Length: 84
Image (cartoon, rainbow, N blue to C red; front, side):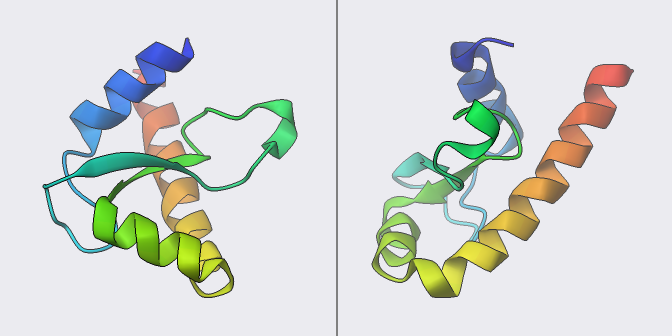
């Protein structure tokens, strides 16, 4: 999938903030920078509202483990969907 298709799919599949459930001011957050040589794939991006996005960037040590778990689960779900 192209980066544009991945962003579009994430917008459809995650119409809410993955931390608080809010729906206003949604943004894409890359979790692992430069991960595996690929920047944009389902296990590396997550939708966050602007407030949670700011919180995550202000305290990466606290939020990074939580975001990795959420993104890994999302990647497993998306990969199962693609197989169908």
